[in-house]
Length: 298
Image (cartoon, rainbow, N blue to C red; front, side, top):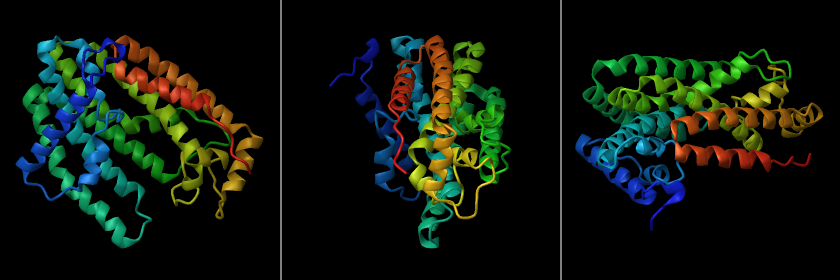
């Protein structure tokens, strides 16, 4: 079945299947410890915008250069697969020891995938890719540190600088586009991609915080949105009802929706300028989901 959305001329299902096969071949070649097939199956889906991100580059190459896009897609999947396993370790430390140990093991098993991804980027671009790798990973870990430190000064408002730091959590996704631009001599487009990723992830983070209130309130690391409700100083005995009461009385959820709309507009401008067709669809879906937001009953 062909996916001809937006006249891509690209069979998305086929490309994701090719990507998955190449990823599994890398696992076999590396002789890595077993990674559960359930994780892989959940990763290689046509609607996984992180995994299909490099397919956005297809419109900027000639048809015979599709192999370059596929190679960058494989590098992206190897690199992001490791980062997602690492995210689990940061997020799930509160789980029982025997469960959390599995996340640690999965992260250890995925380290060779990151090494292979970086090695392939060096093979393609040489050491010119290093400044982007260092800068993106620095921003990524600074964002994680900021998020986990809980050092917010919010006072029932949204701090723009804090939001942009949270947006940096997704900045490593720009790495393959930076490589693409170096190979295609269009490095002036890299800042557009960075702005796109940061703007989109701010909106995505806020929407996820709105959607996951019931589960987030039970975690030791409260979400950014919950911390906004408490003015950066959560109470010791947090409850969903107390958060909802503060949120609804101050219209904090509606302010979040306004911010989501603003940041998705910024992201859409960048995506159109870059002709990132798949990402445009993701932005439109996020905006529609935010538009259909409804409050929970207290």
